[in-house]
Length: 99
Image (cartoon, rainbow, N blue to C red; front, side, top):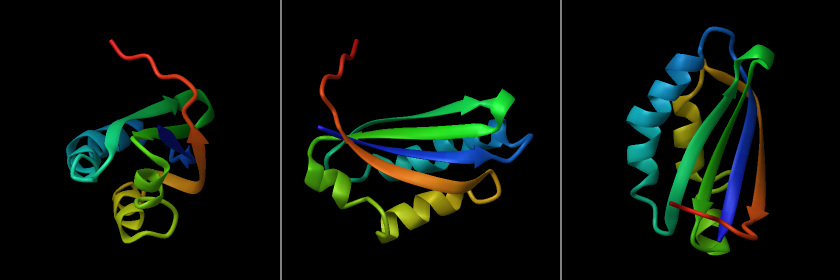
């Protein structure tokens, strides 16, 4: 499995809106993607930071939705106005525990 993290500055006061957009718009879109496993958004409101983490079945599934793909531009664009200056990284998942 592979994970993608996107870390960005959170626009002050936009945390709840970012969560709503992630839940209502991004999750339905990401669930359509082949190889999708899970996704989460984390906020550090005290430091105005946000991070999303998405997990994919394979490196190919992650790459098909990564960097300059139309898919990633679309979902990141949904958070325009809430997040700024994003940094994207890919990770190999060494171990994942799920309930």
